[in-house]
Length: 362
Image (cartoon, rainbow, N blue to C red; front, side, top):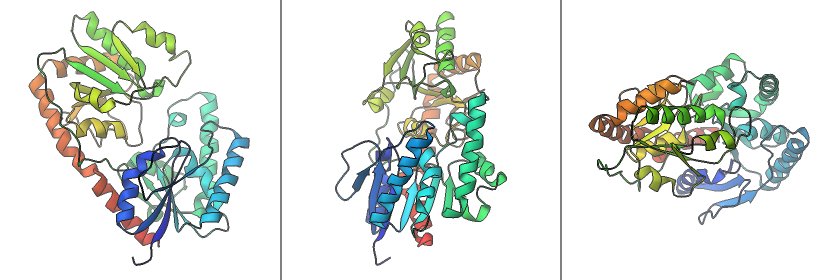
């Protein structure tokens, strides 16, 4: 490409996670703008534009966001607009009628509304599917991070095989990744890093830790992340009931250091898009215990990079913890495998796939 291609990467509060991809694009003669909802110290060469987005269902604020998208897109005339978040994926295309920008979306996951059978989430599913159906003609291409999500969209005629593809994740930087030093003298330490919502299996992690402690296993349990749910299933009082077993550290900026001081990573999630935190743990050489669900089983294979457990099964999780902690050499071997396996999801590999897609688009 001789002429610089103008591309806008659209996210929300975690739009800064696209910095690595943006820098790869710049090196390949793209002019990059990142659209997000939270200010961040972006490196030189990346233009940042802020906008407002309400992550909850709110027709009035959503309409305002669509108008804001349209104003930004009209004034910048991007060649390609790439969305990386759940809500922008189906509301941004509404802002593009009459504009020439080609819209490419990455479906990073299908979230809580596809994990719960509560009435309100059944209604949200209908709304979600309807919106994607209405904008399907405005979208040039849709990438998915796991095959199950792609199959859902194809089965519901929201995309077809020719305008959709599979790209595993958004890429993880491995160039400067540290390697964990194994310390056999301390108590075996498990760490779970996640938003604290029920569908991430947080209750299972808490219960499994208690089962291990009740069976006289001297393990250490860390829980890192913000509490984002206040319901009967998961709330502050429930989390605090396990404070004598699990150390809840809240949101932290030193997550990598905490992982490096741990012996195994745990993510008992009910479903993922493509778990970035599992990639990060694997890059540090941590073995993982996770559920055998879309978005995790491509990263962690049973008995190769970690252990698989049943969804919503605290007893199964406790047994896996005991198995891993009882054989540190086996845990170390899984960690080494994880560090090798994660290379196929590196930023360089994934960025090349996106660049190839963008070149076809223009």
